[in-house]
Image 1: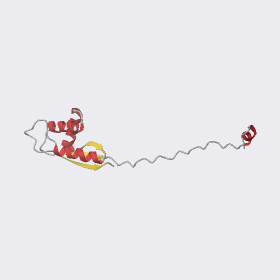
Image 2: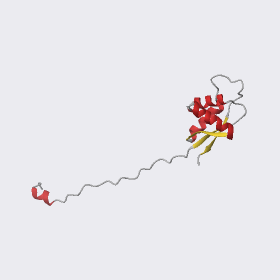
Image 3: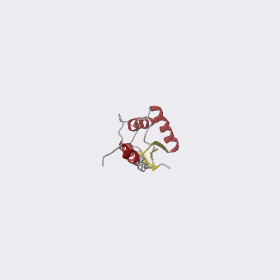
Length: 117
């Protein structure tokens, strides 16, 4: 049957289908972890500031504030990151070798990681 104006007029034209947007499923985000530097009696402020600058990119001023806090309270949060990076930073602290040896510093500092609340 050929199309005529009559068949076109009488044809039921369905409105275009609207697509309902499906909610996006975002990946579950892992909670952040704190990298916590622990105080000891074997490292100077200079060592701590240099280490924080080399590993975390903290400024000298931030490093000094953190060195003061770890000295006074026994611990300081030096970074809050995802778990894998926290583990890496902890290992870097444990293995850190200063740019120049400090006669008054023995070994490496210690750090722990804790889940952020």
